Image (cartoon, rainbow, N blue to C red; front, side, top):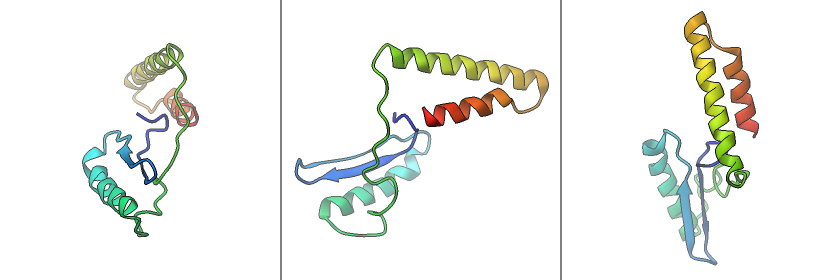
Length: 106
């Protein structure tokens, strides 16, 4: 899973390698579009698909283990706490909004 939860597709004709991945819940719809994008990249065809922002996008790498694991587990724990606060108050949690911002930038 990419760090920013966004799909990335690309092709490297020099190495004979193409990829599509990073689906986070939208895999069924995105995989069809990704396959058509990868096809155009492999064939070297310029198309509206090959200029989409997800082509050859390089998200920041995850931290090495065990730091990555500890960070993710901690973030999930904080989200569970925010969920409990929302259940008790009946209002959206400010903590969840802060966590969303932090996790998107991290």
